[in-house]
Picture 1 (cartoon, rainbow, N blue to C red):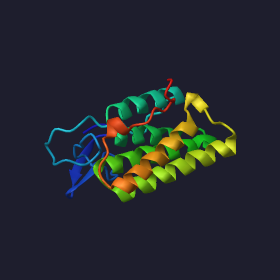
Picture 2: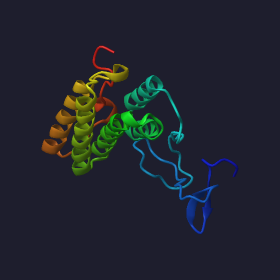
Picture 3: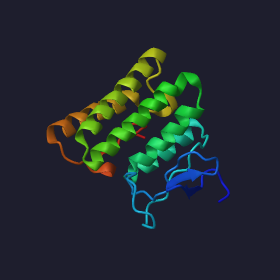
Picture 4: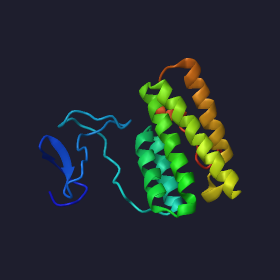
Length: 174
């Protein structure tokens, strides 16, 4: 194996070529590991540096496709590679995507917790910066969506449809 994103089995554990633990099992659309050899969805490459507009567009396409786990990875790349003063924004958006992932997997407790945590993080970032619509993101609408979905999941306790429950990152008009 040649690339650092590729993995190999070493001592029964997947490792990348730098020796770091890296799970190589295929994953389903919600990011759950599948057995080795199973057909999974294409994984998001890690550590990709994108501009904010590209990050939002790619994350929205993944959310629309019912793949919030993969959208979280796109936001995580922005959180780790973006400007320090925007890390709270991207981290909060990643938490929203993970919250949707948990809710779609049927983990009501994790879904509610992460949806609310992400909404609070995004809201605090917006309040601290005075930026309610950075990169055309509609942060007030996103936080309202997250709290509404968290309330629904908390009351209902069941799974939600990931694609059908996904937010519009740039608002209803975008």
